Image 1 (spheres, rainbow, N blue to C red):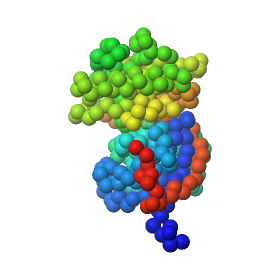
Image 2: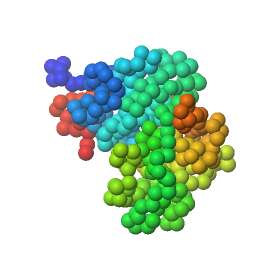
Image 3: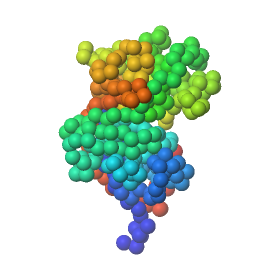
Image 4: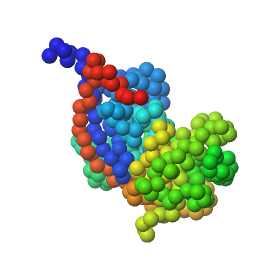
Length: 322
Ligand code: PYC
C-alpha cells in the first residue's frame, strides 16, 4: 500500500520477571555498528533517542517497562550483546532484564536450557537457564562504596544509607529507620515513591555520588519480609521514577554486597529477597579471584507478548508521549 510505504515495524518480545516487564527488541532496531557495548550504548543514547522513546513510552509502552536491544556481541563467547533502556534513557545493567532476555531467547529457540553469556555495557553476565522460565544470572562484581552516609531529606528528616554498586548505583536505606514511612507494600507505593524521590533529590543536592562522581540513580528501601521464608522485602525507585515490581536484580546485588561487607551473609548462603508485590529472587554470592563479591540472582520470567510495533510517520505520537 502506497500510504504505508514508510511505516516501520519493530518486533518485540514482552516478558515479565517476577512482575517487572522487559521488552526485547529482536528486529527493526537501529544498527549500532561494532566495538564495545558501552560505546554502542552511547551511540544509541545520542543518535537513537526517538527509537527508545517510541518503544518504551506510551502509547506503545509504559513507564515501568525496561527495553533490551540485542546487538551482535564483541566477545564470540557471548550469545548476544544487550543494551538496556527505560523511560528516561539507558541503564548500564538490569538483572530482571537479563533473566527476561534469556527466557526470550529460549522462547525464540535461540537458547537451550544450560549456560549462555550476555555482553552488557558493564561486563559479561552469565546466565544458567534451568528451564524455559527459570534462570540464574551471575552478575558483574558488586561492592559497597560508602556506608552510613547521612543526608537531610526534605519532609522526611535525616536519613542514613549505604552507597553500593550492583551493575547500577544504589542508595540503600533501612525503611524501618524512617518513622514516617509505611510498611513496604503495593498499597504504600505512592508514599514510598515520594519518599525515595526526595532521598534521590537530597543525594544530588548534597553531592553524594557513586565512584567517580557518577549519579546514584536507583534508591532502595529495605525492610522485614512478609513471607516467613524470605529474608527481606524491598522497594526500588528506578531512574525514571517508576518502581521495580521485581526485587530488582542489580538492587539485590547491591544489597548482597552490603550484607557481605557487614559479615552478615557468607559466600554460598541464600538470601531470599521479596519485592513489594511479594515476588522473589533468591540471591547468593561467591568470591572472585581478587576477593570480589560476585552475586548470582535466580528468578522466573514468562513471555507475555510477541508483537510488532508500528511507527507511522504520520502518527503524531510515533516517538511516544512525553
Ligand atoms: O532488575 O536490575 C534490575 C532492574 C533495574 C531497573 C529495573 N530493574
